[in-house]
Amino acid sequence: MNTKFTRRDFGKMAFAGIPLASAALLNSDLFAADKPNSKFKGVQIGIITYSFNGMAAADVIPSMVTLGLSAVELMSSHAEALAGAPAAGGFGGGGRGSAGPQTLGANGLLPRCESMQMVPTPAAEGAAGGGRGRGPMTPDQQAAIAAAQQKIRDWRAAATPETWKAVRKQFDDAGIALRVLTYNMPANISDDEIDYSFRMARDLGVDAISSTSTVPVAKRVAPFADKYKIKWGGHGHDDIHDPIQFSTPESFDTIMSYSPYIGVNLDIGHFTAAGYDAVAYIKQHHARITNLHLKDRKKSSDFNADRTSIPLNNFPWGQGDTPIKAVLQLMSAEKYTFPADIEYEYECRAAGTPVEEIAKCLAYAKSCLT
Image 1 (cartoon, rainbow, N blue to C red):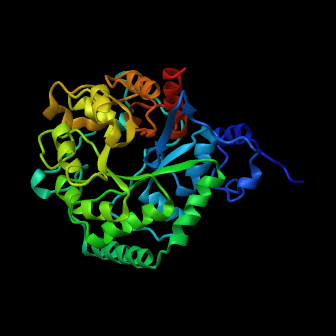
Image 2 (tube, one colour):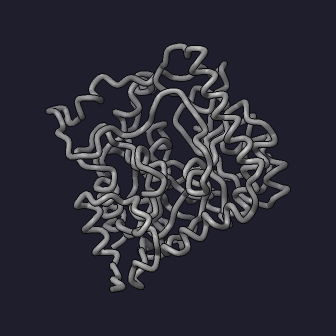
Image 3 (cartoon, one colour):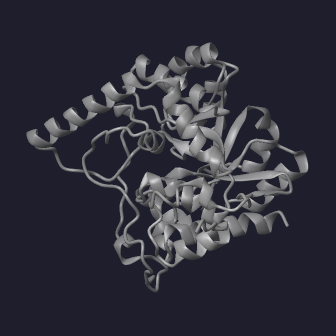
């Protein structure tokens, strides 16, 4: 018997705990004709796949179909995993903790997040971002990482346009528009890897690349953006005291001066935390915005103190200071066509699974536009 599942049927199975990575469920022939649709009053709500951190790459598309999300900003690591690349290697693990129901404490936080501290990366290191401190690696760990990284370099060298067209087809078959590729670029990125990122973007058929990076790297990116005629959006953060970070309107002006193809991936949560007005900025610079990241943070009255607890300054939508509703309504009124991508990052204050919390974010966005 050839049974067809609707998106609603699939959603019931997913939320009931049936594994999403089943090859059968990834077969688009199993789904009925109804496709996901997260475009409301002309505003395309999408999601960056970083929001599914801790889940297998194979679960991303089924989860998006479950949620009804019809546009995606695809992390390069997810793109490569979907294309069959070997693991790139790394020290330590990611993820968002337990995927099951959790209990928040009286302070509104998960117990594992109560004492979470972030260690800011010194500007002198020139890194693209910070992270929790880690001890030194052993020689065996260093060797294992070096071997894994060589495997991914060899795999990338063998990738062809067909490699990425096959990834694109997975999203097309599910009715999901692949709009943006996220390819983060640290200070030590090689020119060869920058070129690889643009070839990947070209062959995936995306509108733009989003990148967490630095001002010096953006200057190096400019010739590649000009060569491929693909937009590259610097992803904003909130470290206003580091001049090489994308965090102030002036830093965005600087990188946009390097090429007409360089723009801004405006994270309205970080922009708000840093003390700026996202609505006013979008009105003035909408023509150079590649996409938005939607999250809710509070303004940082004591910025240096807040830098030590960034995860704790992410809130369920509607509880922070970010003008999500005003931004989405502006996009609708002005008919801006760049996507507004959910970035689920308030896991320290979330009792539900990532899929359940993302569903709440999507419902909030829709309520702002209906």
